[in-house]
Length: 160
Image: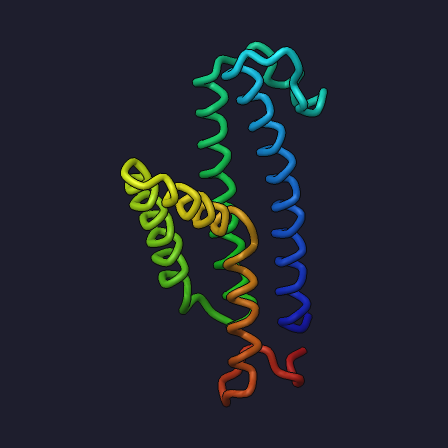
């Protein structure tokens, strides 16, 4: 199988997982808003509401953080797999792992900075979202495309 096909399949899986993540988090945020603000109507999907019916606010927030960590871990795994498929080995595994940790740490710093300046909260959230969606995979794909013209390029027209 050509490298680009394997990379495309991984990217497709990541995009589908990103869509699933979006569904889960939109509905989870609706339920959190419903519980936290004692609203009379919840706009969450009925199946999702049934799944978390009766959960406390703290349990819902904990679920949100656990799901965020799961999606970060899955996207990390897919990113490492993408680099392996496109570059042919695991030489970028540590760099990708360190990058994920660094972006997560930076998000934490911005979250803490938001106590003094609320504008940093948005930056923190965007960084965490970048780790939970296929953003890093797209950067890896782009890096592989840039490197294809080099003598050791990863995606070349002769790859089978």
